[in-house]
Length: 386
Ligand SMILES: [Zn+2]
Image (cartoon, rainbow, N blue to C red):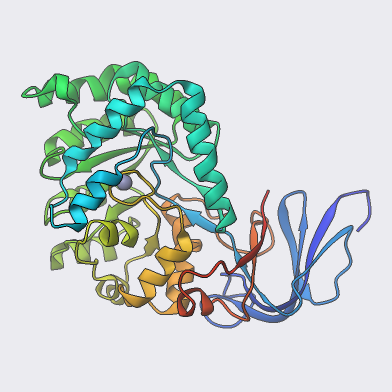
C-alpha cells in the first residue's frame, strides 16, 4: 500500500462469504483461503491469503462474513414490558395497544436517559455482529416527542424512520382521523429533517389502509422512502399497500394470501421477516419458503423493541430463520446481510466486494452454517466495522 493510506487486511480466511456471486461460488460468492483488504472504510480487494497491509487481523482459518444489517429496530425507548411478556407466556394474547405503555415511559424520559438505553442496546447489537441498523420513532406520538426520537436516532444511524403512525395515542381516543392529520402534517414536518424513511403500522388496533396511505403519501411527497408494518397479527391490506406505494419493505408478513405473495414476488418491495417477534408473541411464523420459492426478496431483522421482541440478536434471528422459517443456512445469512441492505436500499452494505463498506465478522466457526447449528453460542469473535 502506498501513499500513506491506512489499510487493514483480514487475512488467512478459511471461508469468506462475499455475497457477490461474481467473486466466488454460489449465490453467496464463497471464496476459500482468502484475504479482504479494507482501505478508507471500503473493501478495496478480495485476494488470496497473505496480502500485505498496515494492520492485520488473523482469521486463522475461520469463516468471515459481512456484518449483519438489521433493517428493522425500535431501539430508542424507555422502560421495559417484562410483566406483559410474562403474562403473555402464561396465555394472554398480544395486541397492538401495549405500545401505549412504552409511550408513557418514553415521553417522561430525558434525552440522556434515552441515549443511555439506546447506546447500551447498540453496543449489545454490535457485539452480536450488527454493523448497521435502522431505527424507528413511534414511542412519543406527539409532534415534539417524535421529532426528539428521530433526532436521537439520527445520532446512531443514517437510516432513521418516522413512525408517528405506530398507535393512536390515548388523548386522541375516538379521533383517529384527527391524529392521522397531525401525523401527515405537522408531525411529519418536524421529523422529516432527521429521517430517510416513513413507516405505518397497518393492523387492526393500529391504522387502517386509508389512514396508512394518507401518512405514507404525505411522507413520499416530502421525499422520504416508505416501509410498512404489514400483516403481523392477521391478514390485511398492508402488504399490498406497501407494494402499490413502491415501499422498500413490507415488514412482518406473518399472514399472507396468495395475492400478497404474488404482489411481493413481482415487486421491488422486500419481505422483511421478524422471527424474534413471532417467537416472543407466540405467533405462527411466516411462510418464508413460499416467499423465496415465488421469487420474493427476503430479509430478516430483529425488530428490537420492548414489547414484542426485546432482542438485538441477529444470531438468534438466523437460528429461528433456519429452524422455524425453513430458510437454508445460506439463505438465512444472505437475508441477515444483503437482504437487510436491500430492504434499506443500500447496495454498499451487506457484502464484501470491492467498493462496499468494510464491515465484516470473524466467526469462531469454520463456516456460517454454524450460526444456526450452534444456537445461543457467541460465535462472533471479532467485529470489524467502520
Ligand atoms: Zn416493528
